[in-house]
Amino acid sequence: MPSGVVFSLFAYGLYSCCDAIIKGFGTTLSVFEIAFFTTLFSLIPAIFTKPKGEHWRGMWRMKHPWLVQLRALTGVLGNLSVIYAFTHIPLAEVYSLAFLAPVFIVILSVLVLKETVRGPRWIFLAASFLGVLLVVRPGFRELELGHLLAISAALFGSITTLVLRSVAAEEKRVSLIGVASAYILLVNGVLMIPDFQMPTLEEFGLLLAIGGLGGTGHILFIAATRRAEASQVAPAQYSQIAWAIILGAAFYQEYPDAFAYFGLAVVAVAGVLNVLYGHTRIRVISRFGIGRVPIGTKTTAPRPVESSTTTDV
Image (tube, rainbow, N blue to C red; front, side):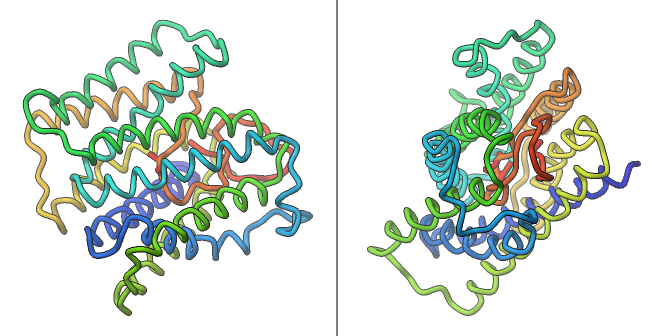
């Protein structure tokens, strides 16, 4: 197995651990506090991994300011949506819904960018959608706000990806990271004030752990994309489904039924085939992908490429 694939598997494993820790906060901290502190602490590794020749003081000098700020806005909304989902519904269900992002990306690419999508890709995407239906089974069980916000996270993530694909080749990474982070910190910093609850030392430790693990995962992901082809790295994101099952069972007593297991398998297989077919660009919904660009995007400087915060899922 190529070392780049191994690195990417470890990266997605760390992202999943971060998501599991976030779930543990439940309702003890507001979604706004969780988003604020996890973003703040995950910036620490980013400070030391910026490209040579780029300076944080120049992050506001952009070639496409409106698109970068649109990307930052959708990043804020997707970030809040997926954190709420992780703290209110099972991990496996969040991931299955978050992996609807490729479906939204293709639909928006056709409607907005007028791209041509061939038949096999539609089949893979339809299979992914059917897999999600098997996991969630609307009409046979009550859907919660967390399910709707997980879908919202996938939608916002897809918009973020399309915008990022348009600007990544021309914008500095410090702009892509800095502006998005500034939006998240500012918006959540203001919104958390009315119900602010000072985290305990244990909670601060967990928030720091999320930042550290997410930042380490980000560095591993950079290493992965430098050692393996995009088509080899991208499918690794679906390992998060396995992690969701393992971590959900181990720490939160979440046990999907047979239909859900089958649906998750369909989502993973269809997703991998979709990635391999024509090097599909996918964004993972994750809070730690602020500065990544989609796989297959050519950039003017060495930058990590994106295959889910992500969340992004």
